[in-house]
Each structure stands twice: as structure tokens, then as C-alpha cells.
Length: 455
Image (cartoon, rainbow, N blue to C red; front, side, top):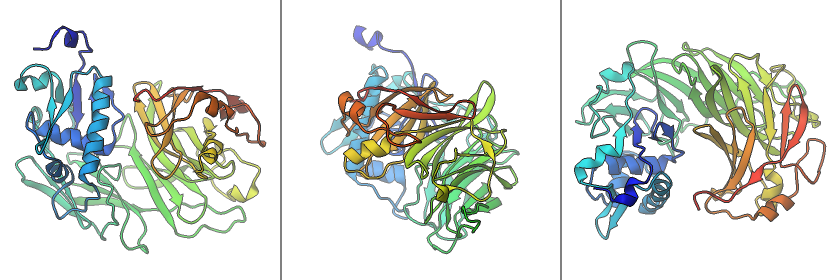
């Protein structure tokens, strides 16, 4: 039984969502990396048993037929981050270690008390014929095997449910832990899988593959009907950088971000259930990440990446049913389209990372990922090639809240305040963010600096 100190801690419960590969606490998603999630899931399935690091790698990332670019050190780092998260979320979960035995999950009370602290998030949907309701009380039922040539779905008894052979071998690394393979709630009786495939043959374009029970329903090659400022078409070197589904009705709309591999353009496609695509947003720079969100019952999309016209990372708010839009025009004519959407985004924000990164000998930075925790939207901006980030936090409508550094990056508030600033009209000395809306044009906003809350 927990002692008095433990009783006074938060009484929330962790939940694993096997459909989205996310971890929740009290109904709120935790911004957990893919590696940390898989380590946590493996320890959860093992219940109270110790699991050696090599066994964690084998269980979480597949057998010898799969390509794995991880080492036991990655497991150690994931455990370290999980311990920090457990401490932040009440401290009732922990990870114990034993020399030559590995790691195990621990919780207050007896081993049989686990379900009081951790469970599997239930979701009633047409996947029930694959994942029976209530059958995952103690284990993750779905097991996925991924190789360069095939996707296979098993149940926990290692029964092969269905498989899908790729039309061409995939390019490693396969991206198994991220957004390239995700189940989409289906429109009919079958479970749908959205695959954002990048093939090993560089002459074969990236493709979105929409698969139902192992059968291909439709595919869409990476392509955007955009012309350069002089009217010349861009070469066929487009790649999918991210994909996601509509937040409120994920079976109806799929979003896909595109970037051109040798030039500056990027855009967002809106794709219906039949695989028909239309351009929703064109950006003067690569689009790196998409986050679908409902705001006052209206479907919207938060988009981030890089803006070449202003040489800065950006984040923008796009309405799902708004007219197709573009990023604000800059003064550099070489970063304009001769065609493309004429509408305006709802909000467009430039982040002053180029100037700050330059002080750290990192000449290029971009907004690379969006996460949501409760009502806080976090945009992660790369500072250098080693994974160091600044994390800008906003409300769901992109009102600025604060910014803080990643665990391995220290910058004092004074250094942040003294860093050169960004302006759409040339260098200035004060603003932290440059904020644009069709109504207000460009404005400057300050944003508070905070130390890393996980440090």
C-alpha cells in the first residue's frame, strides 16, 4: 500500500493508446517521443518482470528481419526521460534497474495493483474485429512487423491477421515509430492503414498508400501543381514530409505536407476518402509538420516549417474549410509562386531562431514538430544538427505563451533577450515574434522565456 506521502500525490492514471501509439495521463496526451513510448509499452507488457535492454530492443522494434538503427544506449536514454516524466506526473510510477537484468516498471502496492496506475485506453470503433473490446486489459494485442518489403499485422497470439507487400522496397530508416504508419478509423467495416511511403529507388516518387485489411484502396504520388516565380514548373522532386488525419472525423479527410527536395517550395494537400487531392496551403518554404485541431467546433490545421522569404522558422493556423491560402508575400520576388492559392491563412508567425542559432554556430534552423498537451501547443524548433531545440508554446489559437530550451540546451534569459531579432522589414532590436493576420498585417509580440521544466 502507498504511504501517506504517496497518497497526497496526484491520483491520475496512465493510459496507453495502441491505435495512435500515444501515452495519456488523466485523459491528457503526454508529449512522449516514439522511442520512449515503445520502451514504456514493452515494460508494461512485461508487467513486473525485469527486461534486459537487448530484449527491449528486440520486442519493441521487431526481429532480425527488420532494420533497427538503435542501441542499448537508446534504451537507457529513453528510461532516463521516462523517469523524469513519471516524477512530473505524480511520482507514483517508476522504473527500477538491476545489474545484468535490465529494467522493470514499479508502482505502489503489490504487483497485482498495476491496473490502478496504468491501463489501455479503450476506443469503440470498427477496429473491434481486430482488437476485441476489453481484451487488452493486461497486454497490447496488436503486434506489427515491418520490413523494407512488407507490413504485417499480428495479434498477441502471433496469429497473422493480414499483410500488405509494398509495391517497391522502402528506403531505410523505415520510420516505423513515427507518422509514416498509422491506423485511420475506417469508413466501412474494415480497418484502414495510411502509409506514407518513401521508396529505396530514388526514381520512384513518394506515395500515400491507403490500405484496408491488406488491400490497397488508393494511392497518391507526391506532387504539387505549383510554378516558380517566372512561371516555370518545379521538377518532379517532391517528398511527403508529414501526414495526419482530420481531428474530428479522421475517416473523411487526410492532410499531407510536401516539400521540394532541391528547391524552396512547400505546401499542404487536402485529400478525400477516394484519394483525390486539392491544395489547401502553399508556403514559401518547406512544410515539416501538421497538427489537426478543433477550435470551437471548427476543424483547423496548425502547420510549421521554414520560410525562405524571411529566412525564419514559422508556424501558421489554417482553416480546414477556408479557401485555399498562401503564406504572406515577402519582398524577395524569387520566393513567390506564379500560380497557387490566393487566399490568406488565419495567422502566420515567424520565430526568431535564425538569429539565435547563429550565435550558437548553427547557421540554419526550422520548426520541425508540433505537439499538444491539454490546451498548450508546442512548436519545436531545431537549433543545430544534434537534436537541440527551442520549444515555443501557444494556445490552440496560436496566442504566444512562453518559450523554453530542450534538456541539452542552456541559454540564459539575458542571452535570449540580447539575441538579434527578426523583422519582415529588416533587422530591429526588440520583438521576439513577428505575427501576421489578414486583419492586422505584421505585428511584433514578446514571449516569456522559461527554464526547461524537465531540467
